[in-house]
Length: 85
Image 1 (cartoon, rainbow, N blue to C red):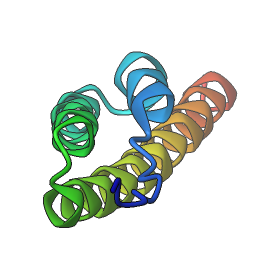
Image 2: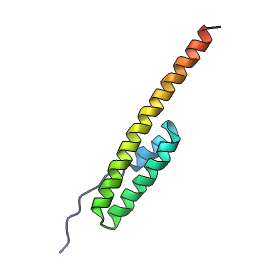
Image 3: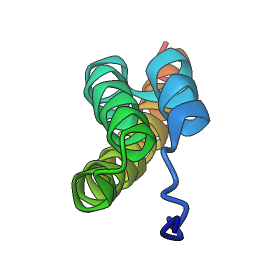
Image 4: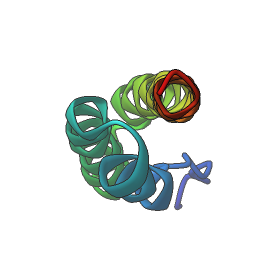
């Protein structure tokens, strides 16, 4: 008899996007946790996969928010320095 396994999201695509476009350091860590979630889910360790998935999600959210804040700060910095001349 097979047990039904629930799907645990890995956030792998979001981690790669975060790594390449938003916040490189947090993107790397989020990618590691995404891969941990995928591996744990593959071998049936659903509790471990769920914890890694939650960590990857949180890291991705924080990384994207920090990336957006950094981009906005850089735009403001460029505008201020160009108008100051």
